Length: 348
Image (cartoon, rainbow, N blue to C red; front, side, top):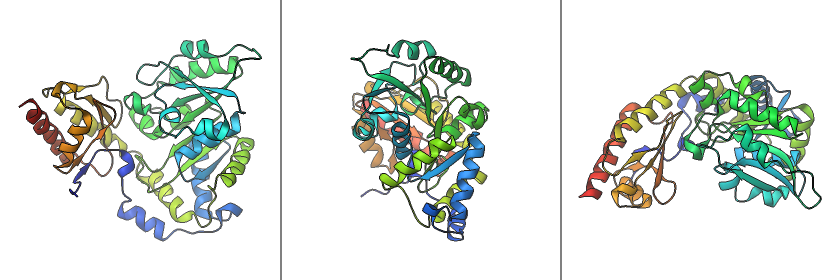
């Protein structure tokens, strides 16, 4: 197997830094199910304060955060409104249907961002033979849309419209902190219109595992019940919660480097033969189309892998490169040169 020297597949490929490992090894721990783990408690208090919510719960993954939020907010047969590129539709193994028994109504947003008008047009009227619109979901940043940062004003317009129709709001905040750094908008301001939201610890923040779901006290109390039912409750979880505490204290501002590196990578490959970089690099993601090379994305992926570079094949011709704390500017330059060699070889 070829050694992967530069991994741009996803920011989930990050590894704990030495300082993070030290914090984990020294963590105070206790039984988190009994509320006795001081490090877990510190993490949840920190995130609740960061997002301006009453309470928060530590969970193993962001997918579990989304699924629990849908379970708390909805009832079987309800309908959730989200962009068609949303993670809950495409990357959670049909979880909304499996666990909550809900439908998801997809919207055709631009780069993963829909308007209040689009959302309002999707709200069902009250009919006995129609599903009930219950929950509106926004993903920040919009991953499959291109790592797009939702503008705060757009989120507020969507939320105002949703509330007028009696709908609840949930944010998939997998890369919320990337949006914070890219936009200069405080996390609390992005979070304010939402009834629930979460942040992922295992992406740009660089932790090995975990996410934190936040909301009102009653919401979190019910979320805890679902956490138990779904096997998400833990014991001495302070060992992994310590990574999250460390990350929030040391890894947030440095995300600006990831965004700069993503733009540098996009600029370096923008004029290569057969390569078309998609509009906008808002954060740490670069999407590009390789159809012009005459090769599918999977083949480009394989040829790069032979050079020790991993970049994800997103669909037949679309690829995604994601920068993170394990990829510096030198690595980005080397990855761009590898793409250049592969594109040149394909054209030849």
